[in-house]
Each structure stands twice: as structure tokens, then as C-alpha cells.
Image (cartoon, rainbow, N blue to C red; front, side, top):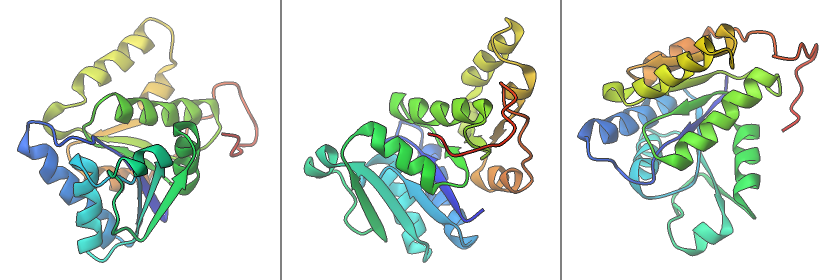
Length: 195
């Protein structure tokens, strides 16, 4: 594992613990010699995680559609800012660059981009781990929703179990390093990057 793709809010949220965990995530990723891949923003938790990684001497790669860069929310101090044409291209590029996917607290964009990675993982499009820094129980209701999907027969238990939940980024990274993916849903023999 050489990089971690982080999804998080473009707002700071209203719990100081969210900002603290974003800072801690950036530091932890940098201090472990990993590259931070994220959405390229300078605002909210996105800016906090990037600034913390940079301050700790880490490499930070942002990926952002041109329209958002033009609205001046792109971070100008990154190791690299990859400018793409659309949100779809952004998601593909972040998936390509990340060796694991971590979600901090955030809103619908955070949720949608992360959940797509989980979907691709259970389909066997990639075999990369997906985990949540469950700060102050932020993702508890989502965890319950996943279990309901399992209980109602829409998701096999092994695919619900592949999602990692830990209270801190450091704990998530530790579990990323030990991750063994389940077999893909449709029995694809060879995992390929087809996203």
C-alpha cells in the first residue's frame, strides 16, 4: 500500500472532533510514508487533511473538476493537483491513484464517492480495502443500514463485513494493511481495474 484515497466533507461540520480527526488523518498518512489522494479542495475537512499531510512532509495529490477549480476552491499548495473534466472522471482518477479508500465524516458527495468504491470492490472491479474513521459514531447509522441490507437479502454478509469501521484513522490503516478481500460477487476469477 503506497497511497490512501480520502473522502471527506468540504465543510468542517459542527463537531470539533471532525476537524481534529481530519488533521490526524493527514499526519498519520504522511508519517507512514503514504501518499494522500483526495478531492483537491482547500475548504472544510478536505483542506484540513491536506494541510496536515503537507505540514508533516507528506505527498498530497488532489483531483478536481475544472469547474470547481475555477470557483477557487482548489488547494494551490499541493504536491500535485490533477484537473479533470467531470465528476465521473474525478472518481475514476481517484480510484486509480488510491490503494485504499478511507471515509472521514462528510455529506452526500463523500458518501456517494466512497460507496461507489465499496460497490466496485464487491463486484471485483478492484480488491482495495474500504474503511470509515467513525468519529464519535458518525457512521453508526450507515453501519446499521448495511446490516439491514444483509438481513433483508440484498447484500451477502461477507460484503457487509468487508467494510472497516474504527474510531481513528490510525486504526483503519492498521486494518487496511491486514485486509484480505472476499471473492467477488459474480465469481470473477481475475480482478482487473475495469472502472
